[in-house]
Image (cartoon, rainbow, N blue to C red):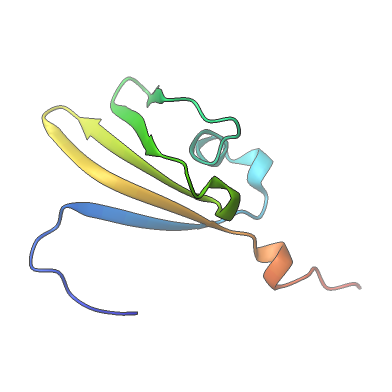
Length: 88
């Protein structure tokens, strides 16, 4: 689906879950069990608002920095399931 919004009130991040363990922010965003809130570098505050679709790797957060707050949806794509590793 493609389109254009006249205003921006949120953001969607689609992330590949390959090499998941070596990327700390993915471990924070795609956590199970979920933590209601956390901060990154005391700059970005994350507040989990919906994890009802966690089994599909979809989480919804409010992300705040200073006086700006955005709704951020994070969708994880398991690339190993879609594109299995090639044997050499």
